[in-house]
Image (cartoon, rainbow, N blue to C red; front, side):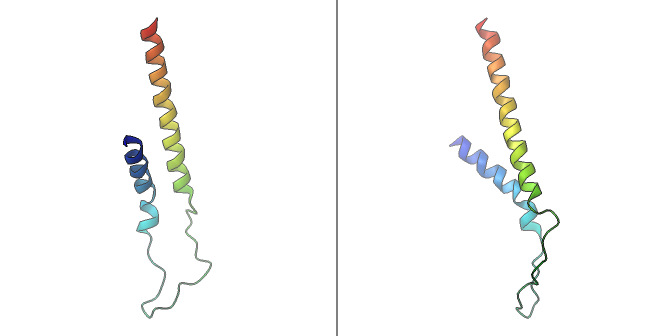
Length: 72
């Protein structure tokens, strides 16, 4: 359950830039113009996923080092 909450929290943080973007439609109900793509292009999601993966590896490595030192 902790993993699910942690993953959900990371996804919520990573989706903040997407949710903060302004809608491109006009008030008359016309659809937004095609070709308007955010400059970000999903890069923030990739960075957040990389940070989550890296932190997980660092924590796992720290636990393994702690266990190997206590076992000596």
